[in-house]
Image 1 (cartoon, one colour):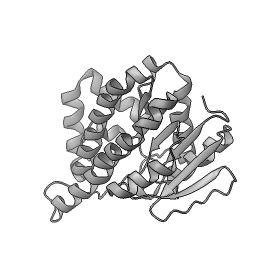
Image 2 (tube, one colour; image 1 turned 45 degrees about the vertical axis):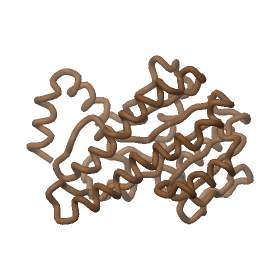
Image 3 (cartoon, one colour; image 1 turned 120 degrees about the vertical axis):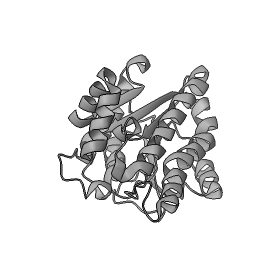
Image 4 (cartoon, helix red, strand yellow; image 1 turned 180 degrees about the horizontal axis):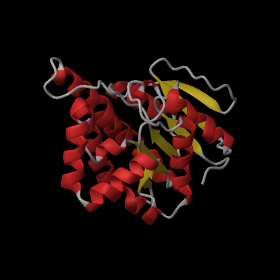
Length: 240
């Protein structure tokens, strides 16, 4: 539940989905929101917003952010990158390293750095992933791999932090109407819709809201994977 006692930290908060997380947290009555980005700026003007400069690929930057925001009760790992690269593309190794450093190691750095505060406050973590953590598209194989790695990370952290009553939620939306999905021509979720759905999960029992599939695309694909994973994955590889 979001209320005036909530102190949230949002990475990648200067635009797109991150900016909507900040806006929706404020609308729900959060007492303070740390809005973190590489530039340390924010598009949301409110006395409760504290801009923070953060590079999730840099250990010192993450440690500095965690020391500034030691009162955090809700960590939202939203920062992400998509190089839209296949594994046999010319610069595939560089693209894969960049995606893993942000989408996997960045999440790991953040969770490790903020774990002491979250344990103290019996807080929560929302890791913003993608339905592509569960399936693979040949045109962006390394993104899918980085999101899959982060899903495994999220599952493990959920077990490690459970004794401290810290909730760990994986948000797996379909395509979102942001710069990252500008090349996708199908239906897209609004950033506000995704932020609201992820925050709603905090009000649900932990047993039913550890992985949330946001939007029809994500829910339908998850259902198809549960029914026949091999056939569903083969179809994705053949058509996309």
